[in-house]
Image (cartoon, rainbow, N blue to C red):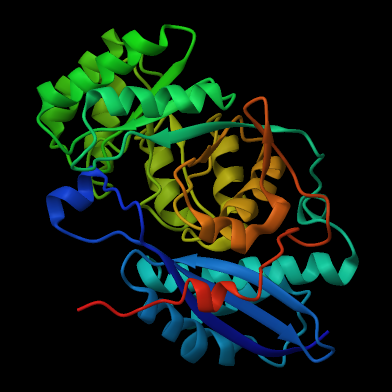
Length: 375
């Protein structure tokens, strides 16, 4: 069916705000701002997608409506991959990374949702995947002024009590000594039966990352995520070669072309990407195939909303991902966007079996979580 219109609506949830190391060091505000993208056909069918913006939601919305919508309106909605190529090549001089790829992500995900609804099948079935549960791991340990080590330990314990045996702690926002004390305290409290990963969000220099990595090895940490800036794949390769702890990343890369360089340089042992900002489901599949061809696992990243997580979940089933990232921080916006599509039991996520993504966006979400400009 032909595409009639494309819309972008901004929503945000900013309570219980916590920061990672990059936000702390740069002074940036990485709020949970989300752009909900809808693609409608002439017969009234609607697909929904999500773009993550990290402070650039207005720009991403503008890119969707002014740059991408005119490229796909009037085209058949089922040509998802050809429409991805059309959007990517038409914005080649302005995009290839960052906000434009985030905008493409939302449109592409909406197109997959639409295709599933038109064919009466969940997206994972369209991708040839079965409905196996996918193990989840919980990211926590963010920085907040009132969160001391005791509260950090209580937080991580709550994730284990919820049924998950793998947790991730943010590091890099305090001194090396203080962060290692935080990780050590969690390790002591949770014991060796719980897997711990650490995420530095790109803030270390090479020498510090090497020193931290060696200490994390002693603590039995299962992977060290984004230890340095994504722009230095050769240095990341040196870390990966020198350390026993696997290097994970880099979700701050974008399309398969950046991931190709990271993978071929052996800069990562675990590949991470996200449907809501790395190019949508289409590009997540491409990145996953690239990783698999080099014998590496792809573990999807997660950040803010609910639609993007569910999109990554469908793709993860097709890619054969061993795990997927999730948050258990309070986030009512996520529930309003995804409905009952996010379900976990025994530390694993069940794929929704409704047509398309299987999400149910509640109509009042756009008023309740209306994006408000800050100055």
